[in-house]
Image (tube, rainbow, N blue to C red; front, side, top):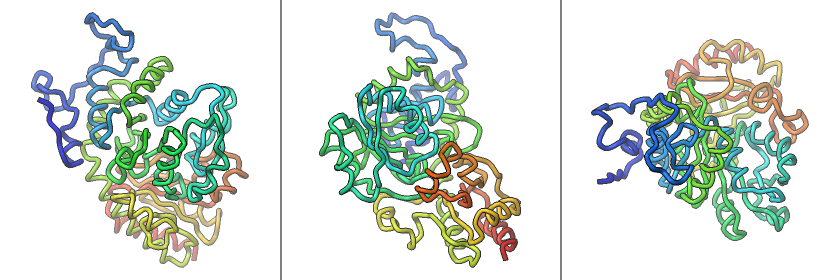
Length: 387
């Protein structure tokens, strides 16, 4: 009998778990085998093989991820970029056109601007806050629209309801990168999105020890993306699948605490005389705060800010901190700090970064699960170097 669970906290623990338990094992075992005995399968994609994303470790994750966002299906991949690129290369064919939000993760931006032409694909960037302007960039060959729940690294919140409505009106596939809020903060399929993408490296795993990705959404699309991934080969290995499975169990506890901490840190920074601007959708001063309150259950542990002293002040501040790890990525249990111009968005030209409002002095922080008081105390002492 298939069991269903109402609340996401319970789904994180029990959804997708094998029944009966494998030899009674309470934790999902690692199936460290590349291939499985032939069982009479007649379809290539049904043969049990790691690259075909259908081992017990894969299948348990697929069911759990789909349950978390109340979707029809899900798929894990070798990385977040594998999820993004494989999804886009599945829903688009040579000659097709994509509408994409203008402020995106640097890897996604580079994929569109540097790789699309080689596949015979085209794109136009759109302002996520100006739905009236989107139709002007619509083409007969437009097949999909792409956005982020919260943009990296400026924490903008596009008019996501308008994205879904626009996609339905013009028969487009709606795709959203939901990494920043995670399923705890936002579940795109519930709002009508066709596909929800994640870098599992971040909040879903939460421990900074794997790289992985996920695609969640409509069953028919997930099946097509799976078949494309089977050919491209960006499959998650069993040990990474095990670590992701384990890390997800504490997702609700981690993200809610990190979100609460980020809200307090953002408020602290906003009031500090050395700080010029804070980007956090949980702040009342955020231009998209009302929209964020309607859409999200929490505002994530991500924030970014600029100091009045610009780049020099940012470099001094980061060096003066003692608690955060100075490193790229995000969503782990430890607080991470970086300048996006040197990490996540280093692949973009300085001109493109400036056009989007990503200054060289912008500081991005991923709040961990340490004491928020210790984080703010450390930031306070580091900010004294600006005075």
